[in-house]
Amino acid sequence: MNAVPLPRRLFAEFLGSAFLAATVVGSGIAAAQLSPGDVGLQLFENAAATAAGLFTFILMFGPVSGAHFNPVVSLVDASFGGLRWRHALAYIPAQVCGCIAGAIAANAMFALSAVSISTAHRASPAHLFAEVIATLGLLLVIFSLARTRRGALAPAAVGAYIGAAYFFTSSTSFANPAIDVGRMFSNTFAGIAPASVPAYVAAQLVGGAVAIGVIRTLYPDITADEAAEIMLPHHADGSVPAQPSRGNVAEG
Image: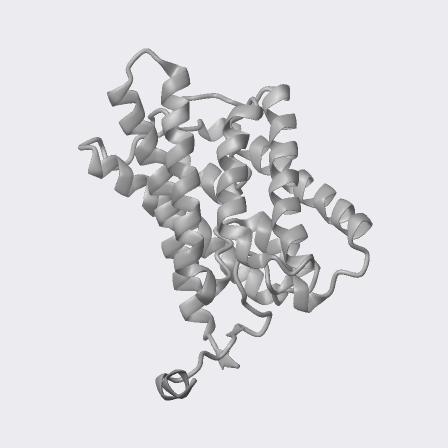
């Protein structure tokens, strides 16, 4: 096994979270500009870009950090032993800072103010319930694939789930506290007002807690090794499977 140092994993989580937020915010800005007055088409464009982006970002950064990009994913992974708690707690600020940086970058790419605090209030009871469901579903996708040794499908499955959840949830499926914080910094199509963020985060944490119970019920024998394989193979000690050398490949 080749150990991946924690700083490298934190950098991967920062970059992946930044790319994710830039995609969510940037595609929302582009959609509003390209399809003015058609909210349904704007949402479709935003969802399609986010789904495709998630697929590629998980492939890019998964072998280094596990491609969590989401504090709830990291906390639930730690609860199953797939990630050390101290590493999970280190992942969270990297994810939050990455999402803030990505939102600011998206604003700048479209010649907007680098920071513009959103005024979009979203925290209705229906939206909060939707966030519980969205987060629960996301975690079920991730951990069911890991438990059944189908983790290689996670990049496509997670992207597809989030793309679908944009439309089947009233909240458009944030399902990620780091994204909540990042999207505060863009007063655009994908933004969320700071006053709505604490309730969204709380709903997502509730979704994570419910997911732990549901996963333990569906898969009572889930192991730490299986939890360590979420998204793409990574391990609680920060290692990834060793790759064959060029010489070995040539000999094969």
